[in-house]
Image 1 (cartoon, rainbow, N blue to C red):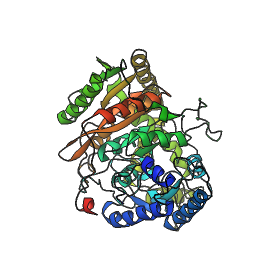
Image 2: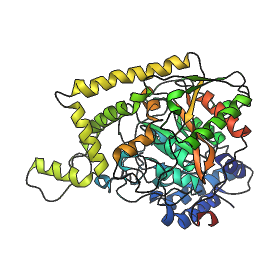
Image 3: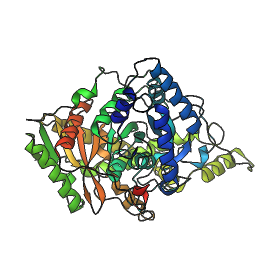
Image 4: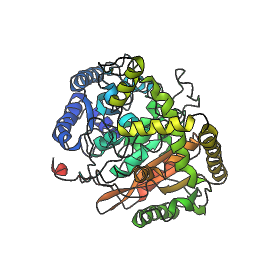
Length: 491
């Protein structure tokens, strides 16, 4: 069976029809994973024994005639900053290299209750700080489309695993674009949900007012299915929002006539690769031909989005990561003569360069004498950026733009230029600043590399962006056939 192309809903149907067992599915994915992993480096931890055991339980329930949910018996990969009971959770950092959580994140409990089968934890930029998955303390994940290029970050391990067919879907996390950007680079559908829609309990915090968990899937129907099973109010998360339960599969409808699309001129300016811009505008034309109305608009404060993000997010990271001191959390150095020396040595040896850089940036912005000049001013600009989105959504249903300003870049190409690396997020960070939902869907290839179309929606209106993405997917002449780099496609 060609596991490279199978979707969640196809696997679900084969299970229900008795064409295949969950054990066969799980073993099939592990066979593929074992062939590819030394080339891709998508995973940090593999849970083969436990996964096969759980698959056998699902098969037994099916034999007994139980009606199971859409995700039952189907493998999933989890980004390694989402805590999993009795399974190592490292956040891609040396400081947590031996950490085994005593509890599950709420989202893991939801997946397990639906019968989903975890096959492993995926690689990431350390503590989700990065745009390329080169900042992991353990390995560098490669892009399945071209093994010399990055898969995006920080959720690059999850994206590469799905794109290469190592797993049918995966979970990542977003702080400034870390699901949408890898989805774009790897040719997947990736969603950043509305802030508060999915519980953050058990997601190791980077920047608490930005962080959200989001899924990677191969098509829009899979996205709706997965989203149905991971949303919901959680009393363990004080930022969780109680909203009416929805079935996102109802958004898979073939009608967008009269829908109003806004194209922000700032997202199509000089900094955007011309070929990327062309692919996105071609996709917009598909939607226009289906009856959508398209206008150019302005998000006047979007130019300040990146600067605002890189003041606020590191400031929150400075606070959140203070717990990793060798006493409360994390590994501890052996040789030290004082408490101060213990803190300094533990954090110096345990954290990587990018984490140190952001903690220093954040500490500076929060320090006495600079708080008002940087942090407080950035919070005011955040309000203005959110107001820009609110104003557009008074008249328009969705905003469309490229997901990223360029194609996947070469491994090592931006390591010596942090500012160039940060520019990868220029079209995604404002969505996290405003807390609204957005997804990326593939809209073409340039020189054999995927291009992502970003669809941004109103808060808690995931249905509309799913409907738009579904209509594009069903009516575009572009069908993404996975053709992996190197010899991966032949495996």
